[in-house]
Structures are given as C-alpha cells and as structure tokens.
Length: 544
Image 1 (cartoon, helix red, strand yellow):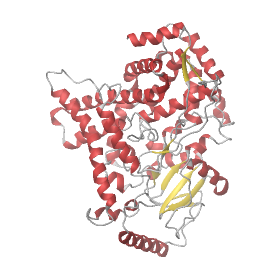
Image 2 (tube, one colour):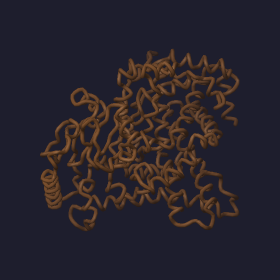
Image 3 (tube, helix red, strand yellow):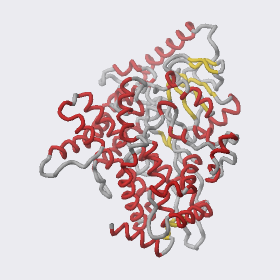
Image 4 (tube, helix red, strand yellow):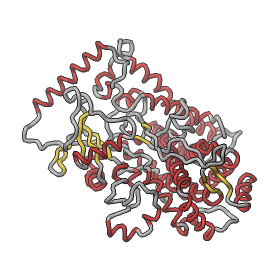
C-alpha cells in the first residue's frame, strides 16, 4: 500500500502516468521476446503486487517454489522482481554473470531525497562503487582484520564482565559490544557504557531510514519524476519528511568524522587514536581533494550506520542496518538460543575448549585452528537462521536470457538465502541445529551437501566486504562465552525450566531494499559461571 502522504489529485496524475507507461510497454513489447519466468500475477492489472505476507516472506517464496520453480518472477507496481530460491541459479547469475547482475535497484526516496547516496551497500554498480569498495576492502580484507584482534579481545572481556554484572540484559550488552568495536575501528572512539552521543545519533538516523518504509511505500520510488514536485504542493508530504530525515543522515556522516579531525588538529589532547578515518586522512595529507574527503567520510560511516544499541521492535528510537555490527549481534543471539535449546552441543564445545585452552585463560585467535567444533557451531548458527534470509537485492543493467527465460533490464533480483539454507537436498535435516554437518568438508563437496554458509554474506561482486571482521568477532565471542559460562534455561517461580520459543523476527533493513534481517524473538536464558576457575577469569577481566 502506498503512503498516505500523497494527496488524491497527485495520486490520480501519478497513476495515470503509470497506466500510460504500462500500456506503452505492452504496445512496444516484441512478440518474439522469450517469456519471463513463471510467477504469481499482480493485482490492479499488473500495477499492484501479489499478496505477500510481511512476516517471514522468505517462507512464502519457498512455498511458491513448489508451484513456479526456483525462479519466481512477478511485478510490484510495474517493477519486475525475480526471486531466486536456488544457490546454483544465484551463482550462475550473480557471480558468473556479475557484469549484468551487480547493480542495485534505484531507491529515489532514500538515496536521493533522504541523502543516503554515500552508503556503499546501496550504490549502483560502476566506477564510484569500485573506488569506495576498494578503500573499504583495504581496511577490512582478511589480511587486514588480524590488526583488529586486540580490540576484539578487549571488547569480549568487557562483554563477559557485563554478562556477570547484569545477565538479563544480554542483548543490550551484545549490541553495545558490537557498536564499540565498529566505533573504535572507524573513528578511534571509545563508546560510553550508556547514552553515547554518537551511537544515539546513529539510532535516530536509522530510525528515520526504517520508518521511510520498505521500497514501495512511497510512489516516488516507482515514478522518480515526482522528486521534482515542490514541497509546498499538496501531496508532497513525502518530500517534506525526506528533507527532515536527510538532516540525520548527513549528521551521522559528518559529526563523528569532524570529531576525528578536531582530535587530529588538537595539540592539547594529543594525537588522535589510530583508526580508519585517521589513517586515510593522514595518507591524503594536505593534498586531499574534496572527492577524497567525501569517500573517507562514507567509508568510515558505513560501519557506523549499524551501531544502534537496541533492535527496532524493542526500542522505538533505533533500528538496525546492513552492517557488520548489527549482523554479528543477530548471529550471536541465534547461537545463544541454540545453546539454550541444545545443552549437549554446548557441553561438547566446552570439553574441546578445556582440552585445548585449559581453564586458566580465555581462548584467543591463536587457538582457532585447534577448536574445530567451536568453529562448526559458528557456521551452523549462520545457517540455521540466516541473518539476512532475503539477501540485499541486485539489479540487472541489461536484458538477459537464462534457461530460456527473459530477465528484463532493471529487474530486482532477490536471493532467498533462507530457502537455500533449508533445501533438504543440500542440507539434510535442515531445521535441526547440527554443527557436525561441517565435519568432513571434503566428503561434503563430493556429495554436494552441507557447504559452508558463506552465501549468507551475499553474492558475486556485491558480497559483504566486512564479512571477515564479522566472522572473527562472532567466533571469539562464541569461544569466550562457552569458556566461562553455561548458557541455560531460566526457571519460573516454581523452579521449572522455561522453554524458549524457536521463533524469529522479520525486520526490514535499509528501506530502499526489499532486504530483511532476522534474529530470534526476545527470549530468556541464564549465564552461570562454569566453575570457580571460570568465575576467576571473569573477575580478572573486571580487574583488567
């Protein structure tokens, strides 16, 4: 349904234009063109959209696959959309034909009117995107992320301390830890325990982005010409809102960056802490041109955008983003739920840690290769309930033919990662949390099953460039929690264990996408120190 800010008069004009364009498209369509893939029909003579539930739409798309196949094509308000339920098809198109399938859908409301052009995740494929991504990868490639390990270890020690101090607030502690990591790496800023000014700013900006609605809430996304409507015109409420929200986007981009520049220039406070922003500003030195400064701003802010400390449905002043920090929190919450429901798996991992690490210290990254079961738990948490069950969409830059079907230029390509990870032919017993499915990767490859769930980070040329930092942070957090805590079910007043529900949220991310994030619905669990030695380690982190 379109947003009510569009007055009836303007809506009639816009609808007339849409009808004319649709009619013109029908007249000019060549009968010799191949058919598009099968899919449900849209309402309003092709100008509406099929009935798609807002809750867990990935499940609906998977069910549609039983009817239409692994490629499902439909139109939403005239715009072509292709759902892909198959990992092979996603690889064939998004990876092997990356030159055609690596762009992003046009999002006029958020990118142009609300000022989110600087976001790497939403940039259209081209030279500007290449320059931004190249700079981002310089700091977050697998060869660069070991540099951040001391920051991650220190952050996890703070997390263990906070879990001991206030265990019922474990989700807040996870989010604060993720925000602290990103702010330290990007800006050299130490996040306050509560009420950090820069995290609060990110919350407000992301709140506005989420409340702009999923793509299609505003008619301007379908008819970009409406962006030229004067703000004073009746029906232009969408534009007035966008300009207000734009202030938050620009503030989030500029304020922490200015903080870094001021610290660098200040002789009284000493030199600024080494971080991405400082490194690039020093490299550019006095010869930097305006474009370079904007790029440095954008790269630093990309991760910063995800530093909201509470999920949108638990606190109205914040929302998540398609970033490393938000994704790691969702993955660790899934891990905690899985451990609460599967104590035997937890105990197996703890036995491995005790054997390799001992009980007189915490795990480090140097122990990683010797803790394969802990690593398998991480992979299974990423697969069992993928953080982005509907991956960030791609868009075609030209017509393409695949398996005899036409995929038109400008089609939004939506990979259904959830369906791929719950394909019984690829992941047997897919709804079961089973880390040992990754025990023999060589045999798995021969059988074509249980591949490591890396596609959860995206596809082809648009794969998440921050994935290595995310994997590092999730792993050290999982290993450290298992080393000192038993994650167990809480008990009610009668001493009976409360079974947490295996339910997951549906959250929109970056309103200019059809993408979604999923994490466990709020649940309760208890963190009990495993032993006196474990308690001593926790207290040691407090002393440190």
